[in-house]
Image 1 (spheres, helix red, strand yellow):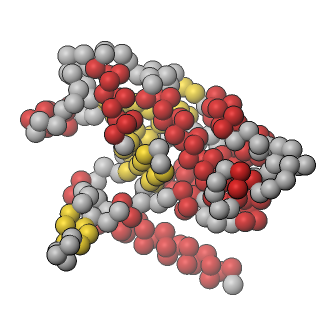
Image 2 (cartoon, one colour):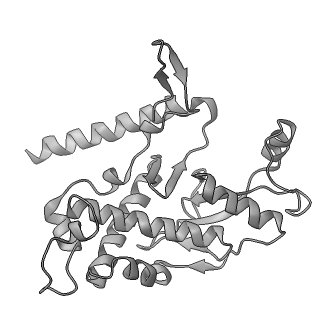
Image 3 (cartoon, helix red, strand yellow):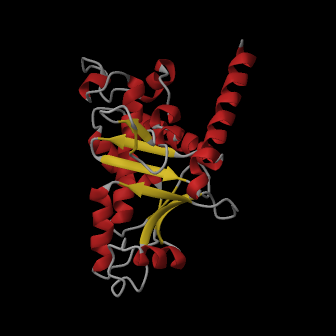
Length: 254
């Protein structure tokens, strides 16, 4: 979504704080690639008729690969919101997703501005928030994770009852059974391979200052950098660098 759209009178109206079109999507994590997708989307029973993409109401195997990745991310985020864990990304990276707390100054600012949905007595004067940590030894600032209202309200509800959010580490393997059940007509080994591929791409791009937006009918999840008023200016430079690298790569392939 762009920051400004034209209203019925043709005037520009601000509809968002930042330009989310500068964020990567799951189509950037896994672009349309029939050859690669065919290696990930494999029928559990090869005698079954029909295309797997049609079984799961998407247009292609590439779209199905993205759907599996989205579902996995949502399952992980929901488990963190439920207070059960922090998630350690696979592929030998030290990145992780966890429930942390906003800085004290941010808490004070939001309280003064009347934008505090939390009971600070129950939360010990803390405001929980989801974060993506680039790595245990990285000096890069962690990304904040935005979730749409349904998920955010669950964070508020849990925090206001005084319950804590666990930092118990969980790996991808813990969530695989849930993913396998959702896509039970597909070969489990290749589902896991597709997820490892997508998480590798995700960590690669986020480590290079990109942002990620995951959007479907269940809501929105955004991994974004905390850049304040310079957000769009900085992110345009990041996007331009990526496009330049991609252009040079294509030129070298020719």
